[in-house]
Length: 469
Image (tube, rainbow, N blue to C red; front, side, top):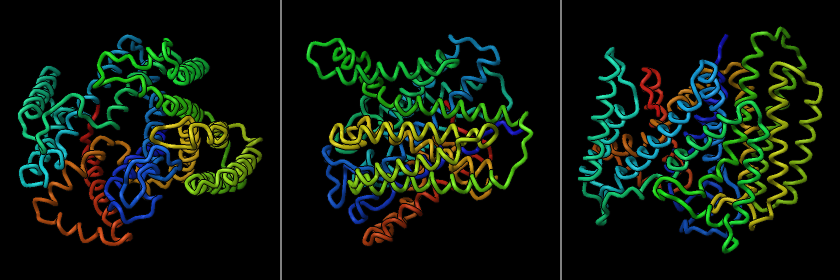
């Protein structure tokens, strides 16, 4: 029996690919919904008072959700094999530290950080950094003793530190622990705190919910001067690595763990479920596919357009419709779809009830509405990919998503540390400026760069060169 949920790989792949795409499209000339809601064109000046939700704002929460959904697979299976909680905690801390190093290292070796304007030196250094990441984050595919693998990894880390501390950066910048990739740094924190929380609440979901309620209470109380909540919120022994503020993303990771448990239950049940597919099930799959897709598109369009009342009513009607369709489902795919849809329904309703709070839904500064709405939409996205990838078995057509999702670290950096440096050395980079004069060409620019990054990722995934922490 296949023990893998391709839907989870596809969701993670979608998140990482759209993350690359959103950073590769031309700036200033595309519609506002093609960028983060708080940095609209043409000047892209950050406006924290501007509410809205675009597809770009879904990228990061979808990846966080997929990260949480992977915990039942990675942590749960290791516990079943007899590994101790202490060992798993140590591994979670180690993973968090490695991701922190990754965040600091890659941020310092983006070509635009090394020189301005970018030159041959910055492109070559970026390529060197990309190559060095292989021995740092993958197991060398050669037969050798464990100490040899450790020695190679240690040597790579030492070389990375030497390179990091001796390179000259643009605009007089010097290397600093405080200068890191914020997305990866948040993931590093979630790798430790999310894993730890799931580890001790694996058999009972309610403590996880209680932790989120306590976290919300602390965040809401942190504005009161002299309170212990404010002291806890501001305390950090290592500000370059941890801030209490990062824990807010547990509101997305924890629902992800519940989705992962649903997937685990479904995979386990496949071996004993003897029900055959019926015409009603296939009809239900099509209806759910349409419902979930419409729910995502509807919320993006109407929340960004600030038609929040219409969105609330329309979303509620669609959610009730889906719940009615699923009310009699009990096992197999239908039980999984019911669990995913119901969980997404609860979170979406909570998120929309929070919408007017904190000035409307925003990614930055992130609002409670943002956490709950994006988590709810992530459940719907996972439902979509489960129907497409696992139920209908469209693996070939979604292979680029699945393979990218299986190797996300390479997918994340390949455009900046490999594709763009190579294009620069080949003299092709100036030609990309011609694609920044028209909205369609500006989008095409992003598609080209993202496609090249996907091809690179698929190549390394195919030969089983994975970066892991």
